[in-house]
Image 1: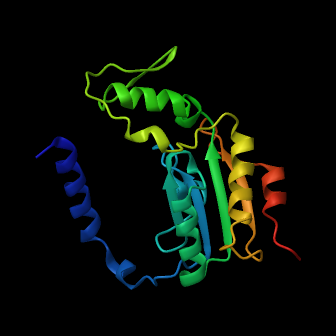
Image 2: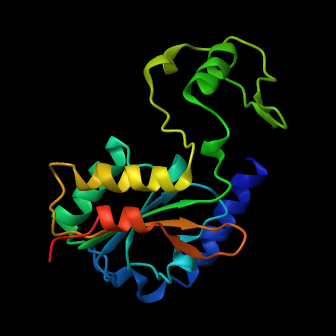
Length: 194
């Protein structure tokens, strides 16, 4: 058993031993909203958005991007579980800013081992074989955080599966201060009609 697996299972034992009334939490999120954000380990949506278990849906992926799967989750969130507001929250110093589709495709074609981030960007340090299976994947990399937040809010807003009555807010989480910084153009694009 790996050290990480042992630590996770031990932490779960401790958590489960004091689970208490959480067994009675309702399926729909109590506060009625969903957050789409990045998987970055420095982000803790429960803390930066003041959430307790059962409060909101949190959908995480690389970059917090409005991929087809993220939109699928948001649609299920509102349609079946009653959320009424969405937040798109990207963050500063995001790893999705440090490569392009061509870079990751090239790295994967050379080796499936973990690459290293150097001052010159990501470098392949592994040995082959690699795979060209990523040739047609859109990795949704980020050039500019505010532009990507706006693009994602717009993509959600224009989805034929998302009702116009749901407001969508756009923010960037600052990893140095912990503050949420509004992207006004995104929030405007996501505004629900009055």
